[in-house]
Image 1 (cartoon, rainbow, N blue to C red):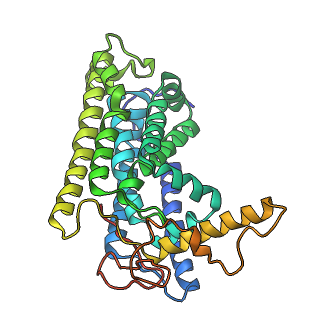
Image 2: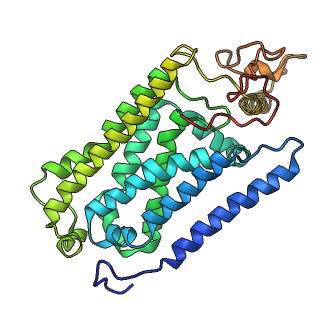
Image 3: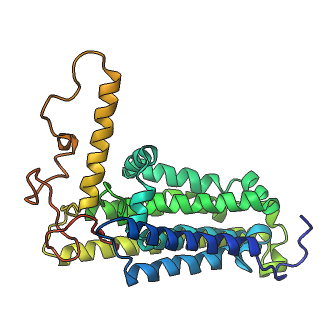
Length: 342
């Protein structure tokens, strides 16, 4: 890789464009294929398509010229801004915009389902986001992303993963993982706004630049490296606070203006129940294969017995599941899309 001599030298970023277009094509093709293989296909709504297009556009802004070049070689503020776009814009729009049938298919493998089921817990989600976000900003990794396109792409993908972990407990959309209660969601967002952004205080109060990679920041944005670092700290802290607290306020406002109480969970849809059956089957299989004496499941028992009774309540069926459609309040047939707004 040759030396970078100008902060605004044009770079078409053909590899990045190719990856983004290929990813979008795979999403569209995957949804069409899945729609042809089921009796009741799940529609990809216009609202979801707009959000997916927004995630694509935000990815282009963050990962191509000029932001990607400034973030890689010239300015810590640009790098922090790039990471915030991926964390707070690309990740939630991607989660809300992906076709639900594709989300079901992607999250069905037992290992991934188990990981996501654990990451829905707020303490683990906060810890995971903090480790990924703060770890990606260590001087060694910042230097690596400045010299290696492969390392840069890997870290960008890692930030998107951190964003998905951050937003899943708030937005839901993963089968078998319901959103937190509104009050808990608000508290969770407050913690996420504070804990992962603690590095911003170091940027603001440090008396020396922490990243030699951005020693030439004056040539790009007209600021000395220390001033660039301080501005990056303010951008990080204020962005996390304003965006996450605003979303939390909207969550509380919507909950308080609805007929439901603040403590209510979202009603189950068929995809949630189906995922719980799959988990119960896997648990039963493990017990059967791991036991050498007697049957693990009593004769005539129902796999639905393994479903958490706290989440499987309501008059929707003989097993007590509430198949209420989040959108209309009516009985929800199989393969109905859950809510896609916080």
